[in-house]
Length: 201
Image (tube, rainbow, N blue to C red; front, side):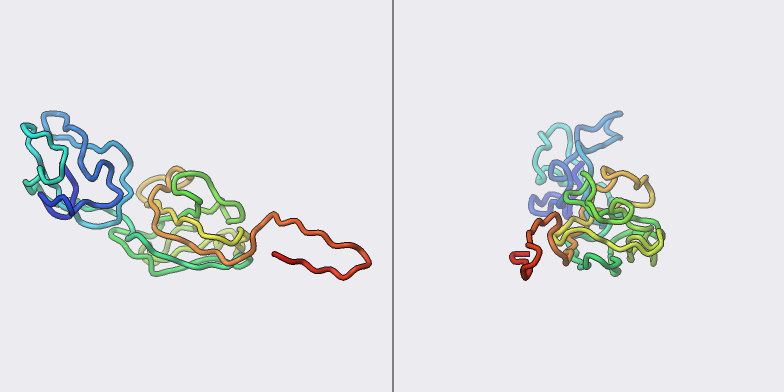
């Protein structure tokens, strides 16, 4: 099978599907299909297109038999949001297909790998509200502020349908969060008895 936007069209591939959307060879007499890696595509409804084993089935144009539709639960990708270090962080209007209360977003440098210093609960949001469209950090812990360094971070999504407690559970990059704030770890020097001027902050 290939998961695509249009059967037989090599230009209709879906971003963030492993192997261009083409599955590994089927098993159980052609009834089971799987992909070589995690799917991190946007939420949507896509075509399932079939290719006969008599063909190499290594190009999208060989999959010209429409077998049905596949629904991918997840957010639409490419959003951008802004927060300010030293304040609470939250945002709304996250859209997608099948989003639900309890979904979570984790702030990471790269989705699926590690956490970022200065975020409540290691960067994992409180459970989403308003049908999975609104996220915030630290509210359930008493209104904690974000103290992370200024910069751009990946917003990485995880569905309430699965476990969302570790960095590797958050593989789908929804978009970019821009954090307004200073770089951390800066070292400057002033001298007692003299005016103090800090430059290049």
